[in-house]
Length: 76
Image (cartoon, rainbow, N blue to C red; front, side):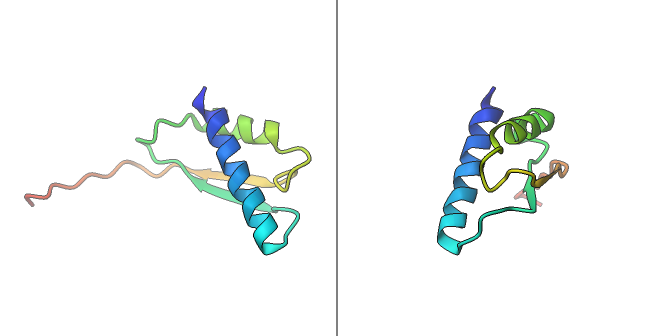
């Protein structure tokens, strides 16, 4: 399940930002996982909630938007 690895990377980004910007808690985490990203949103949410205790994400509202896929044709 690569969602756990993604969650760990997201947590690392949040912890780095907390150290740099001096905050200790995140109230809301907003993410985007596009339709073609290959991410199982429920699994990512579960992974984030599982690793959150004791971190700045502890108790954060997690919002994951799933925009539809878009494509374009360079010839058009």
